[in-house]
Length: 292
Image (cartoon, rainbow, N blue to C red; front, side, top):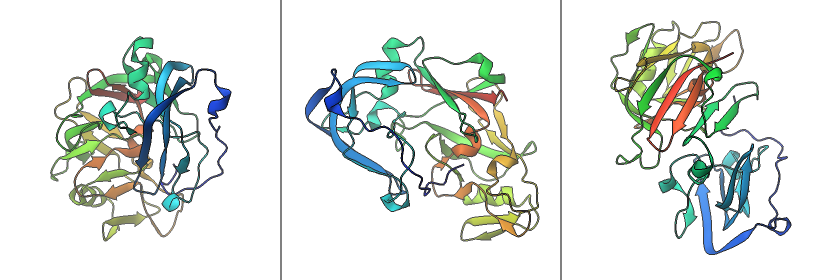
């Protein structure tokens, strides 16, 4: 599970407009985006045929990166060709007029207005564009409404009013809005939720919102409770092992649970357990346990 600050050797492809017969310049258009860890990208905008794993969009508007920064305050790098925004179009960073995102541009060419994800820890995860693979998950799907037009959540995959618990017991902590951002590593929750969870682990300690626990302890499973789910079970569980950060057997260990004020984030600990179906046409998110 990579840290937001991780740097690795870059070996992604570099787009060269001069080698494309379908390249079209978008005169006067550019893009710029940035993230809290210093990552970001900027440059002119253009149109071309974009193919991601066989999902193809002709004449798609996109940013041609003249400046691409990753992690470590912007000084790091990763093995990638560049970021793909899979939020809603209101968040598109092309200016002066925002354009369709990859998924929005793809919708006319695929059976369903969805993309599906199965992230894993062994670099074998995948994204299905335009359909959901029923063979990739087991059990009943839980479907939740997404408040992508609510104040402060515009363009985001946000569920309002998530509660948490463990072992069938609901924590007394207040519910929070939960962002499903596939680019975020850690699960982020309120201080009260974190305190309730680590209170289940003898020997845990809190230092300014950073919780640690005895490395030899077993982390309890974590329940996500979606009381306004459209269908399926409203309690969804992830293994406590998904929160484990490191393999030390002695001393104190940290986890992939962070404390935040305001909106939380489901993070990789949730995504690596679930096959997830992201529906942009009728803003909903569905998920069930991954096969294997």
